[in-house]
Image (tube, rainbow, N blue to C red; front, side):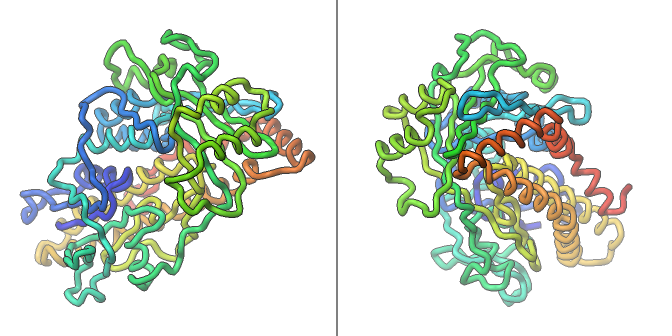
Length: 474
């Protein structure tokens, strides 16, 4: 089976690995399936096989317990790499601008008898961990895809992509892992030349980056921390939001999955992450070249009187550090996610606002869901249709897998999107009265355990159970 993956980010790399794990070999594919990732940017293999892989520009991310569970099912070595280079946080502390603690919520959960934390990391760190397991020959880097076509539009009956230099590459399946501005999405929705459902700006801008861990308080000088230390700090106020936490850890010995799941008290590594979100009607023209001093001044104006001393230390230490501006883009709810051999995965189908804290985890769930379902459909096809051609078995398996994929994934993703949009209001400008009403709601939700109840439902979700139900296997 020939598969093209458009996009070599976290979604594309992880989807490749899920396909390699779950697609069966058949008498006609004993040499293995041909899976190629097409990415317009360079995709160099990380220089080190182990250790922290931190890029000190860009943004930090959190891989939630449900995402880490999926990675653990993929490969325990990849799981261990991701946890070791990041920081597994077990609790998020929520505070008001005046320093009052509103409450806390668990960022860890017991999933299938194993404790999974939310791994705080640089995006680059997670990408590096995945990239180490994808062979160089599987990535066509520096190749820009300008269009995708489904079978009937291509003329040959097979889906294809068209590169910037005019090369047409046919396949049995084209997966759009190309993010919120997906090219494959254009073709899925009916017109390969334009975007009928362009990305939606949520009215929130983010600014964030990385810093020395010494900026955090308390700083333990490399000693192991107790169960209440080293957590994710989330601060809310009338002018927006400010969060920070460790995103690297130090370990004295190699950690196994068992070690990582029985203790969340790791020592800080050298790098921590921070970010601020605020309401903005417009997006800067150039997100890569901006007035750094002006942005710092805006941070001081928004957060300068907030009572958490760590926030002041972070802001006043930014002059010598790099940071990024990041608009909050989402994908509108799409009517379809697939069309005759073209399937959208991750942000291409459903980019979520940052308030969901689920973007990377949804990419992992999508990649697993489609690869596992396609593998099952291929096995069923070969068992039931011995006289059918390989092309027909493959085509049928792709279409049936895509339908089940959407049937299972769409309700969950849209539930998370709706909930995240409700929470996004806490990051926007508020009057004095609205600010204190927000504090009251968050305090009540934390005190009543509502936040933890939501997270328990979110983190404890068993995707494979739903997929088996959809396949009629349980």
